[in-house]
Length: 130
Image (tube, rainbow, N blue to C red):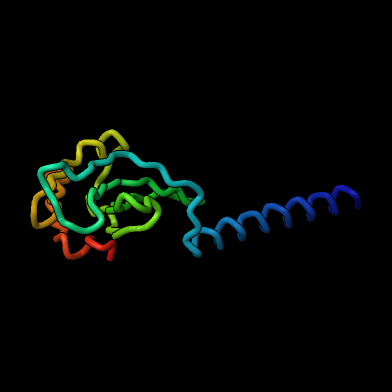
């Protein structure tokens, strides 16, 4: 009888942990954020706003998986900015993500992913940290 009670308690505990992990995943809870690569706007580009801006590609680790986002922040608050989901369809590793090319120009930021896709973010989307 004692063994059955311990087995039932163990099964209940494992089930509870799995339910908690699933709920945390569904709620989008991030366990950690880590900047994989970063690029700051050069002195040759001025947006006359919250200069200088920085584009970070961040790995967000969740309970069951991880994903990448791009975040453009200003100098005043690195925890707030314009967020874009990282759209490269097949990042193989953090080292692949580091191969992303980021070019700042007077009209915005051009991002070229390791597999060749390009994304252009116009300055109107991030100046003033919209």
